[in-house]
Image (cartoon, rainbow over all chains, first blue to last red):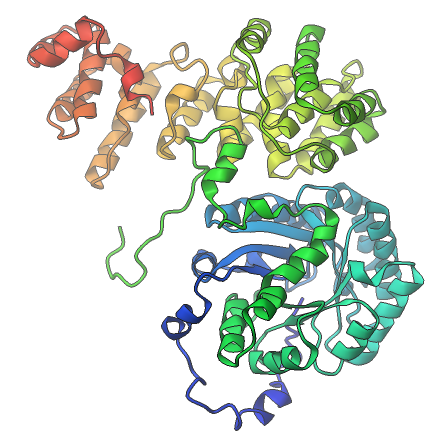
Length: 340
Length: 282
């Protein structure tokens, strides 16, 4: 739940900065920046692939994204029954995981009841009953995305219950911070996590901006930044944040979903950082390693699955047959008029 | 299901696990259903990620116990999950079916693979028929493979319609049919006719059909299929020609034999046993 359709106003600071950044690099094409990030590997710790196309998967693979995390979220309209939740959770560990594997990208997910739908209490109760069935699944690297949206009492109730669940299952927590009244919502989310005795190094606070980052880092939490046009961070601002705070406990994600968003946000930001003279090691930490360190606390991330480039053959072999490729998708020639 | 198979699986598990791993499994395997089912889900968190090693003796004994059943090249997690499912108490049918259904309904991809692999070992086999055909409908390659290949359940329980769908979908997905258990035993005329139609569609689209699929038509040679054989003999792909020769040689239709006789080198290779379907199994 990353784009709030009620908040269509562009982020003011995006425009404030436009004069300064109106340089030759302003509209740089993929072919121009591809060389800058050649050989880099990326890990997107927040992206909603159920809303994305196969074109996106191919572009992501091509740009060096080797693994991703898909948090359970709001699907754009409220669900009316438990079965919808069940099928959605199953799809995150089933069909979507398989679909991703066909494009050579290792797929993880976080499981949780999102804050918006926490407000439908009768349904939320039922969801909480089935949630434990899903959080122990292979490749579930955290409880998420949970936290506040409107900051109602119901949201707080289910946020707290899920923090307890995370503690019991020894899983990291991925916190969605609200669009409105973000600063207070972020502070409140952190305070409650600490109140529940959760070690901040197990909590990833998401959708930060210049206003929230300092407090999040000072308290020992991970600070995730969503590069998302108009409503969240622009990547030029992101470069400045990294320049100011360094790479420690900072990670970047795209949170690409069904709104206008960009599944290549990470590789693009990496290229921009490279152009601005940020070191390769810093880029590696904020676009790859920190996410692995944070969510790896789940014990569910084995980097050998993807660090050499995630080969479909490895995965097929793991399923007991190296002949069968599990249906890897062939790559069509995109710019050809002829479809074969 | 016999206890022998459970013991066999446990023996293989024992040889492929550390003490801590087998102790964990043993404890979970004798616990109450809910705990056992949670262990089924959580297995990858407690077991190492590796492919098990098996012996020829394992292979032989499993196959004796449940013909066609095999655990070769399985991961330890898959084997352990299958073993855990065999530990569910089947004495109360309603309870047992409910538990297995819950596992299916909430399963992720690898759990589905384990569940479908376990089908030949489950009690009340007729109970799982719809699930099994659902796996054939699956777009998840690994799930499809788990029901289609090295799995004796379909041969034993699928009706002709479901069986033909399984074989056709295997061919449609360009997967090798020789991995299907019971392929020879379940050949049928309808399948042969549908295959011929399917080949015509592929040919019209400028695509091809894996040569070994023609092994399914030899017993049901019709004039139309005989014309397909001629098409194969004319193909530039040597394997198509070989497939035609093999299919014609197995046919009791006299015209099929005449056709084969026109291609003396192929006829010789087939009759001398130099050429067999095994050569086309890939």
